[in-house]
Image 1 (cartoon, rainbow, N blue to C red):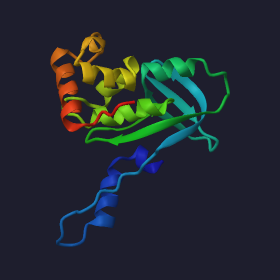
Image 2: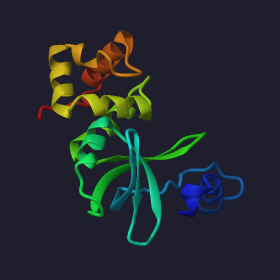
Image 3: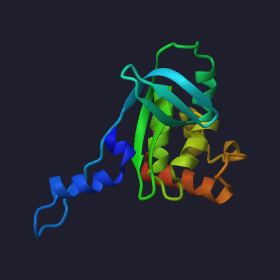
Image 4: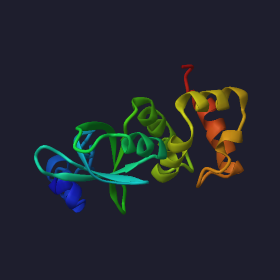
Amino acid sequence: LLISVCPFILEILNEMIFKREGEQKQKTFTPKISGIKGTIEELLPNEVYIETNSGLSYLIHISKNTFMKLKEVPENQVIKLRTEYIVSETSVKLFGFIVSSELTMFKMLIKLPKVGPTTALNICGEITLKDLYEMVTTKNLDKFKGIKGVGPKVATQIIQNLENKGLIKPI
């Protein structure tokens, strides 16, 4: 919890744990939160607040697909989101997905140039992993139309990078 509240502590931990006097830093300490289980405290179109049994609440950024599924969850029902914890120079964010394939696609997309977490989340909210596979194999960019942050140039780059790097596999 302290690490998510104070990102600069990561750097202090890195220095204390992994850097010896006169040596280059060889490893980086990044906490991993792979899932959150709890009840919905507040649900908004792009984020959800999940309260865990311990009483901690987490702000989790979600896709449109996850939002639509969470809207159907009865009040006080325990849910579990698969998450990806991303630390950047300016922020620490937790991204959550109710469907594992959506998380898989998100992780694949953020590895690509010109695709940050927000754009990847927007893509995950509009298409499925199966759709993405079909788009790569047919080179059809139509489903990217209207996705915030994805113009024709970025859409073409995404398809080319996924194809060239062999990141997308048949489903």
